[in-house]
Length: 500
Image 1 (cartoon, rainbow, N blue to C red):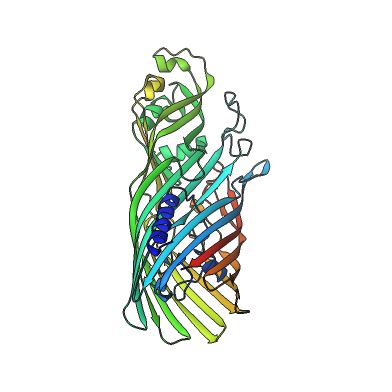
Image 2 (image 1 turned 90 degrees about the vertical axis):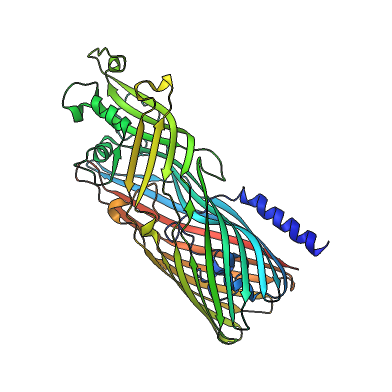
């Protein structure tokens, strides 16, 4: 098979994979602790040494370390989060365990080196987060059984995934210095099924009480005119049992609401000598469009006088669940910029030690989570047809410093053993922690191994254990109870490499 045909087929496979790669899930905030099993096995370090084609997700300049030829990596990983949400009520504690406990991620990278230039194509999952609490969990009915019209509980679910198709180019300026960059096509998908209680709705819709977020728009105004706790009179709706946002699909590869955009990375690698290398990289903030779908429902569980919707109140109230179909746009969702630097040192011939420092700019992109719902202009939506709800949940994430330490030992000519540690401070303030988005894990221990079957064929494996982290949203007095989130992970990844 010709070299040109091999390269063409590898590129075609990458483009196909771009439409199949599913979401990854949070370890450093919403980022993975590392990309590729060589990096993960060494605690997520990667900025100053060869770590395969995953370098295009890490520091693209390290692609210049490969020898002349072509290199193909095919990888699959599994993330196994273990998440529990615990609510404290006057009658005691109730816990709910997330059903989302296994996610599989393929990745593919192809790089060609010709003298001082290297270039390629890759598809990788960037990161995200996700949980799912069943329709019999404590979250499934915010009314705690008061809503007689709710025949079965509400699933509470989130899934956020971001992936990239990347074109890297590197240039060896001289024997010591290499520079590189990538142009990235970025896609994002999101599913949300979220039930809010009456106390949470009142906090959002009442300008004097907005501590967890804000809600406004013509739909809020229309509902408020009927909502007796706001009007102080018998205007039609005596109680709100829940407000339920629902835009979700069953795809393993993309969320219901989708958006697309671009980003990029630059990097440098300086080889001080044969034992010491220094690397640095900057990843830009993404430029994504809004995540949008026309297949959304906002449902409201209420105790209502149904006559008010026909202009003829009856004075008789009943429990009802009112679905309103429409479209939703998640505004200003972006992935943050990242600045990183690293060092790799070989104290002896078969041993390498590495240290990376990263600074992730979550604060600029995770100030809040904003959804704009627009009801369809249809008769089924009745008085709410064409109305708009603009809802914001405050996030106020902090920027995150990440430190990664790792080492490798060439145990034999064919076998390399790896281990590492990764720490990234929880970026979510406790007051804004949401059990659907518990990106709170901080400490990771990692292990890995690589084996060279021949000079051309290699295999690498990594295992990462994220120690269980706990954080509690203190709630809001007697109206919104405290909720504790527990989150740990056990993840693995395997990669095959072929150089030709």
